[in-house]
Length: 395
Image 1 (tube, rainbow, N blue to C red):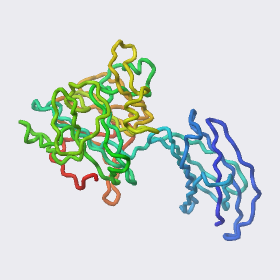
Image 2: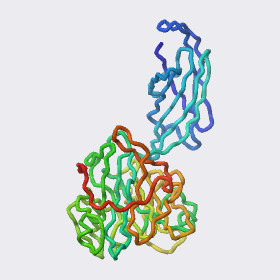
Image 3: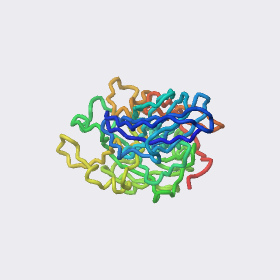
Image 4: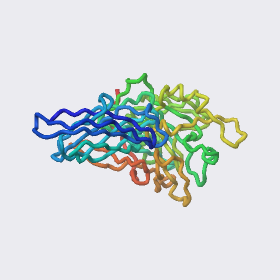
């Protein structure tokens, strides 16, 4: 087959740009004619071509043979021997976490032709919550809670600077930000915002590997009067050195505290009745720069309160999980549908249950977890971990 060349002319919004044809020629290698295909793309409305990178086309013939082409290195024409092809195009959106472009199409090539592909946004996260658990005050004990995060991709991911953010949850109506028309900024719940330590590549997480963050990395089954988790082997813990309620610094590596607005909160994140958890990573700034930015430190709209809240823009979100109180009949989503379309319903206060992500598939012993950005579909109820014994610590 004659080597083909692709050039990618980006069309902003609904504007289509078409490259000129070239004449057909004989293909010396296969003895078949080859033709030039001029092609263009339409981007989702509002997306600037300057924020699109890593564009790759995979072209597959009817025999199932595929070739991939980096579209940034081509000169304007696809040249293929006559035949039928399926085309898959993928790209990365640089100003939104987890946001990719994807488009598909077919080419029936028996003459010079022009083809237009329409790209749409899809959201795929490498780092996701695998399990979220709180004792919920079971047997009068509140300190037993944890968050397990898994690398659901096939590439090494770095935890350094990844933020854990507890958003306002348990809504029956729009919150103050939503009521003010601010739907792409998620206000923090009272308490703290934390992140993984490190300078960029200090804490790699291998494909399929998970890491556990405990509110208190200790043997809760020993400390409590009931059945609780042994989290003494947790990878990280949340130590709130500012807490006026007191907090113990156990042996696990401490998460960094980026911001807090209530020194009387004893633990990070989870409420007993409902919760909305976010994994996030700022774009174009460090976690510390984000947490000190006036753009993201806001007072409550329509309120006279001077208390500052850190807000998380949807564009920074890696994963979002909302948990709704089972006993409530009215729920109003905290998140935009692209981050979490619907909360998980089924957590009973005080029950001491975890929610854990469903398995999507297992390939050669490697588990991949379901992630449709819909908590009601992606999670199910489970018991707490019991004793956490990681197979390998994050280094």
